[in-house]
Length: 365
Image (cartoon, rainbow, N blue to C red; front, side):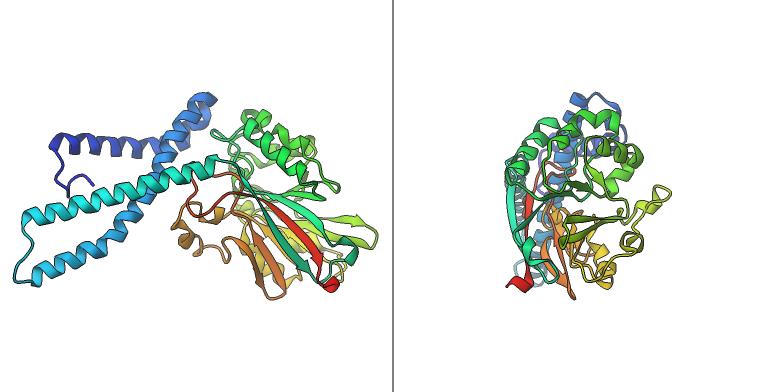
């Protein structure tokens, strides 16, 4: 972007300084951002994380240009008329200019997507053991909200109002709710106390809760009326018209806190296997154990749907499912693209969502 197009020496010098400065600012923001006043932390986070997103998009655009550059180089090498310096310069400037325009176009549209209104995504799910009386049961899922320097109380209050308008039977929050301590974010998470659902609001930990102080956050969520399922199971419904809802800790929880980590056997101990079972698990890779245990539906997040394409392809190296409704054997899984965002305030090819899962009885069909 700077040297190959042979830009003016002063432009190259200041461009390199800017790139180095932004590169250094990123780890500084990660390490010290939480110690700054919120207004300064928000500004610093917005600048450096925006650069993170732009750099990722720019690197992808430049990588895609390399085959063309290599092909031109090969043709020139074996041609009777090799490219002269002027033509090579023109090619380099064309590639740099095109990569820049594509990058900033995608970054702009991605920022508009991330900072705009979050869409409600309706997903019908038929479950074979769900009682017929519970057809049209509504579960609203929030996940990967990432309340922190850039996402706060006003935004969350608007999300809560929209969730309540859906008149859910149950609200589930499948991890990565916060990026910061209870002391720093208590007032920003407080709107969750206004969530209304007939059978309650439930939460399971994500990996970011363990970076933010999992114990105090579990206590704070309980205080505002959100039930934390710490390798536990509850009954949803009444009498025969009911199903089991279980929740397990994040896949990595045992590495950060004693007594944590997913323990599905504990959550399901003593369960009647003829009843329908819905599992909350932050990471999709819990699906293999869930399928072996007879879970009917696993609800997950964590992936952000890749958040910025082509990161989707990298996520697939770690997780078996990235976004949407899928199936492993007799177990279905829904993976949300997330309600907020982490890092770059942009989403490219992976829109945020408030998920409305509309359950029906497969037997009723």
